[in-house]
Amino acid sequence: MEHQDSVHLVASQLVKEFTRYGTTLVLFSAGVDSSVVLAAAVRALGVARVAAVTAASPAVPAAELAAARSFCDGLGVPHHVVHTDELDVAGYRDNGPRRCYFCKSTLVDAARELADRHGYETLVTGTNASDVRAGFRPGIRAAGERGARTPLADLGLDKSQVRAIARRWGLATAEKPAAACLSSRIAFGIPISPARLARVERAELTVRQLLAAQGVVDLRVRDLGDAVRVEVDGGLVERVRADERVAAAIRAAGFGTAPLTVEAFRSGAMNELLPDAARWR
Image (cartoon, rainbow, N blue to C red):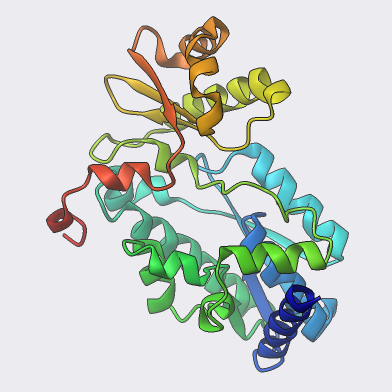
């Protein structure tokens, strides 16, 4: 009962936060964080004063765009899709340590234009307190510089609390694994291209289908340039290493004869390869 009361309290605080925002446009990825933010906005402001916007680009899996559309339909809020052109930006395309800064800048700028056109007063992201504590997150900096609000982080709500609110509200995304954009799978310094993004998407889709019966949750296919790494839930590593179908699927997706390794999933694994001094260059 005490836990339920605490979840009710933080959920109520989140809804109250939105009463100060006015008409709101939520940058919506269809993950649990932005889903809770969007649902809270609707509870506070009503569907007539809330909308969602999702990026469409080669770095966004088609399944995620479809999921975003479906979730918004369920809430009854307008869902806008903006075609971002981050691959036209050299800082993004070159895939340096600040890649996410250029990506988020492009998205927030497009969302701001949409908000101005439709009369939305406030832009909101799903950044939570865990994201802020994680340290190196240039995308958060870009959104903050452009005036986007972060109600989850402002209230100190971490990932576990966000999921608890999602469960309380019965959101379909409550247990959804984190799903960063496809560019996050490509090692820093390797130029991003539509072809690289497409082969990562194909590989992850096929491998996830192969492992569905084993209950896979977290899955990443990391493009290391001259090699490829599959990351899965820790308990599945040995089984996946022994599954010849996985190696065949990776080859068929476009990685050819690149050496393949299988390791336990680690969020932000690509950041581990960066020297600290390189991060804000």
